[in-house]
Length: 263
Image (tube, rainbow, N blue to C red):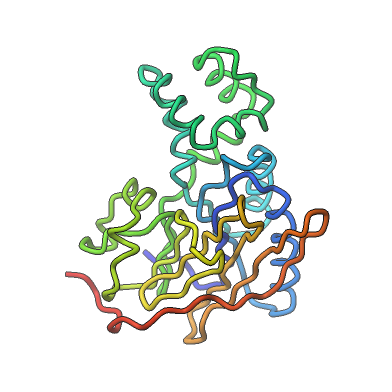
């Protein structure tokens, strides 16, 4: 069922940029105070990997989940890498090699874990020394739904009803979803694939807010409510020692037919 109505600040892929996330969260608090609405934060996943401070970024996420009522974390495909590494010992070495090539090395460095130890020892240290982090990932949602929006990490299979989506598909899907210009039952809000311009993208059927934070310095959040007003966007602009947050205009694309329910 759709969750209770409130303003959502949906945050795109962080990828270990704790510095950007910390500044964006402060700006969200200020923005919410000015607007006076009931609000919460939804993280669209990929908090970890590639950037230098994944552990610290997860700390901020956990603090927000505890401190801002109703806030939620959606599991990203990079968090799935970490959980598979923990949960599949018979394939741990192969999973670990793939994970490390995709940003896991930076994540383990942020946890102070030396790669010279065995994969089994790495998994044991993560589970034993950081149980709150592992639990936060295990408790993450695969989607957050409102009357108007459907929030996932990567996208949806456009040929499948929203209530029958495969959670793993919503974390990994790309072109079958991104290239689809037809109607969807709700506007899908997603990350996973960085936008070409490093700006948020608004299409008739979806809103993409992965603005390549680890590369661009632009970590974006979308201000979503249930009104007919278009969403607003806040984004960081990393100038080295100074991180500014400003309201940004999205890249917009041609409309598709009106949203209709899939049968």
